[in-house]
Image: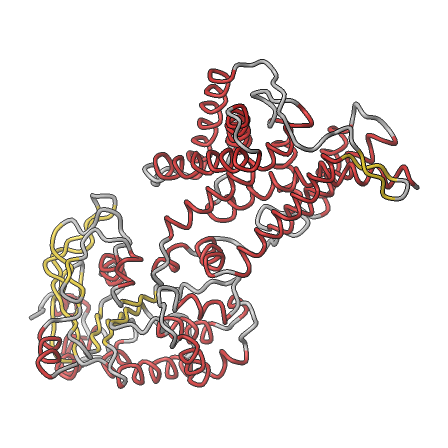
Length: 291
Length: 268
């Protein structure tokens, strides 16, 4: 029993990482139907910028803010200088453009920071632990879970409770009609890109103390987050969170009880199973089609 | 507003379209030199068959067609708006209800209405809500429902109410009766009359020429991208060509097909 609880806590920590990545993917997908393949690389870039700022003796909070801002800036610039001019391109064309951005960013990170692994100085320790009953939680895991939940709550409040969030939802459903009401659709898209990129950056920073920094650190979390988004239903923000946590927990429990080596395989088996039963994803809706 | 100001406002048309030519993808010319005006407080209707360019005209006015109009000038409230973004034109005080109504299906009725007042920062929004819900009781009833669950007629009411929430000076309506039962069409036109009576100018595109001419002060007939006839609506109603082609009145002597064809080309 204690062991299960232990695996669950581990699953929650990775799950909140996956959920943050998935939220970024879903935010962009549901507003513009573009799958952002550069999501992981934008996050990596943000993390490396935060790393450099930390090296310049900036306080931790400022360095992190700087890293997230850099990620957001890349997202916004990509939107204004690549996606907008290419507005006549087909959806597939736009998706390929994000793939291009992914390669460019990955190359840039390798040139600037090198391909050696770096250690990200993190104020929370992986070895200092807290005990909740019989269950042991490392400070990093606790920090990841709490930060993840805080960010998800903030995003929920923004999207569901504010005027700008309402405008974001309107633009996602019918951009032309939103413009007719005086809503600046382009600025809203740019904001969505900034938010999604910053969420990815946050996931990168939370991942950094666990895996060491290297230019490909976000590849696995990006794929998992993307899979979580598909499992939750690409259209649904709560779906992304649910998918992320489910995937994290399934992985952790499987790794603990059966095989550590095959945990990723198992994760994707779960996704296949879910999609066989519910092709639209856990919280996705089938009837909604954008025309 | 002082008396001279009012007079000046009367002089300047709310909307002036001069010699506008629009082409899709830069090649497919749809509008071939259209000129028209909407004066303040007027309801103006545009009649025309499918493919005549009616919807294209509205989209061109609102700035929806990229890099168009090719030629000509569009002035809204005396300002040249060629090349403007739709949201900036909307903020001048133009509300546009596209064909198919443009409601947000997965937002509640209430949220749809709130978005109508999006650019407004004044404190009267709350009282306007009240007014809309009194005027459209069905919207109060359905307040918390997703707009996509409303019937076609209810959606049209919602689109009208949402447009009014922006307190527009000019309302552009693209086929408000499309796909509605005749009784509902009657209701929609009742509301259009009320909006007219309240002094809001409208540009109305309709297939239902009888209803449209019934509310309009002035009308234009658009055919293959050209204005072929214009006049006050009573004059248009009396025009034999309009009667035959848009009001469905059959002329006795035109039983032979070729005659119809000849009549069709005898505009103006």
